[in-house]
Length: 260
Image 1 (cartoon, rainbow, N blue to C red):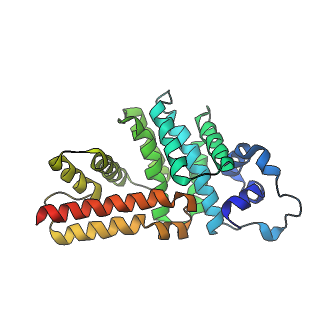
Image 2: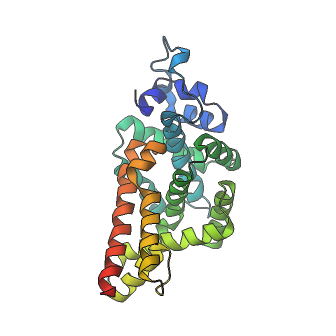
């Protein structure tokens, strides 16, 4: 049974517990009662199992997107559009879409237990560093959706990164790469696009070919869709990871061509 089938069956709402279990239960609404009849202990999933982590990732992603969108005091149309874009890329069915919207709204509420949610997310992911980074990248993209990152949003994101085990330097590097990714995607000037390609790969333009290749391979390994799904990325998010690897490859190829 898929992770979504387990969710609708009620397994995670009762067996996961904690703030994420509460968020998911509140967001499922009427779906939560379906399939509970005859549920046995064998249907529950232990800490670290792939389907459980997928449920945790889905729940945390949309709740944190709502929380970050509200950080500057107002949820903008761009931030809502960003959430809609993620839902579209995930090809959510009507039930999943409803739950995602409910989770987004839960994250916007005053008193959202962000530290407790992040602590449980990190514990549930159990050292899956690349998966945790992917989660952080999606959350940061929400704040960048309106084309800027004000000081309050940056401070909030740095706190989220710290809760997830990222140092201030690692957070700064990640912000730079994500900024490069955005510019690489939208820039039309050849010179600026090449500069964005280097930023996306996280290396200076003075890097030699060996350093370039090493950075490319590291980024591809971190965002490899199949590896991320195996570690607990919901199958519905594979297109998000795929697009990232496509842009990493395009940046690498552009730099190689320019160097020739």
